[in-house]
Image (cartoon, rainbow, N blue to C red; front, side, top):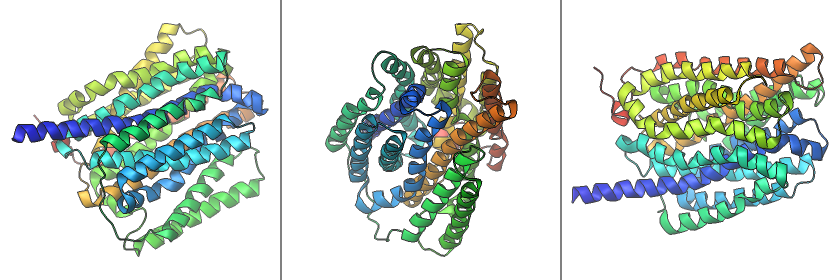
Length: 471
């Protein structure tokens, strides 16, 4: 009887993970396809290619602003209903992106996509966290992310092919059938998981966190870029910082704050936040920098760029089956400490890329880098919830997902800012290979700073989840 119950539980966990992975597949496919298409879209919109990073950051900013409410929404209205509705919103936003004829309209549509993604990804993860026991969490995360990683593998070459031989608008339209399939699968196979909270939405918290995210992200986006007057940038940064301080004061006295920072008292969660933020900020710039480097710096077509870029995601896909074995063998502490160093070094290698490199060298560097980065992400995403009580899981997913998206936004923003600052210092109006090298060095060093954060948690942390036994 116990074996039958265990098998049924494993089956339910895997089915839920695979269905949630459909949503992640759609989001990741969208992100990687648009990165490859940015130079072509820039020419059609009549803007500089480096300015197209606003199409990435506007989406990420929208995610950051609305993710804080995802946990409350899931508890209040049911995780399945919110997850399914989020897929619909994301799909509608994709349709509008495909109809854009100006950069402004594209940004609007990307913001709508972000609203859907803000509920889709964290609520989907919450469904899985409430389905799988901790002893099966690493396996569940692997089941969740393996199909989702097909998006980054397929995205670059598919985006390059579409842009080169068809129209960039198709890169958004391909989300429609995936979104429809996701809605059908959720309706048929996912059970509703609700905590039935009666707490009211922290409205002031949502306003303050939204203002903080918007002010800081827009301020960082425009620093030294000449996009707006300097006083506007300063005002946005100051306003964002003020809103952040006001939210912190607000949250200290609120019985159910939108973002519960007391979770940072849990060592494993704290390490996942600090280390994960630094690591994602570094790695998050790669989808923006690499396609631009290959197309502008190397002079390759979008199709060729996509075929090279996909190697990084292919390496990530290869790692997933090995993640469980690696964590069982080395544990979370050793994996997070030493693997972050290896991953950062492979990111720094990108600074040495030149057109004279043989194709095998480029593929190998990106494949190996993607392999180790994937292990790092799996470890962070699993250990973050290792010691979080079930009743606080919604709050944990909201806070962790918010910080996760902010770190990626910071990565794109910092990567673009370093690129422009390097151009300005050298007196160039278009980015050259030295500028891309400087940007990769900066983001690589950011990823390297994640290693010391591991010291904040015990060496035997989360052994129940990893299955690691100290010698």
